[in-house]
Image 1: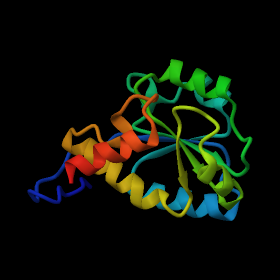
Image 2 (image 1 turned 45 degrees about the vertical axis):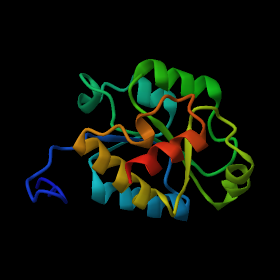
Image 3 (image 1 turned 180 degrees about the horizontal axis):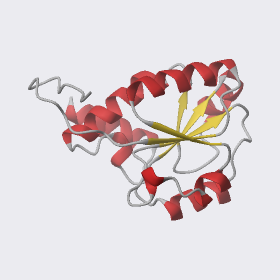
Image 4 (image 1 turned 60 degrees about the vertical axis):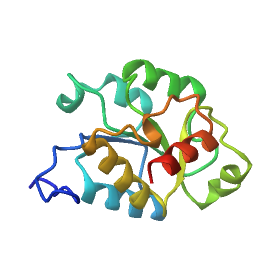
Amino acid sequence: MAAIDIVSDRPSPPSGALLWIGGHEHDELRIARTAVGRMAEVHDAASIAEAIEATEPAFLDRCPAVILLASPTPVSWTAAGCAALSRRWPLSPLVSVATTLVEGRRRSGPVLAGIEEVAWNELAGRLSWWLHDRRRGVPGSLGQPATARREERLLEVALRV
């Protein structure tokens, strides 16, 4: 069933499939993964290597709309792994889904440059906006270069409101 465009009541184009990398055994990640699954088609991979090596039909001819990295601990992902993902799907934004164990890092700044970090309990709301922007053809905050600072992303969103 196609989503309804909020503005025009016409069916909106699909926003693309998402890629969830990592487990969802942790309660908070399980809740976040369930919410994401209600919004879009989601493909799962246990690790970055599995995601890159997989011959998932959904991503043979296109990039995932968003790559979600399940982050149960602050050291879940490496810069080298994230760079490999960016080389494989250069147009897909990388988003780290952080549990409460990672909260301190969110306040002190992201460890992995160019990766948006979102708390597990904020993911559904933020993803909803990102997918809405994507359906409208607006780049939104995830459409900015990976080198954009958090302040630049916030300013871009504020200018559109």
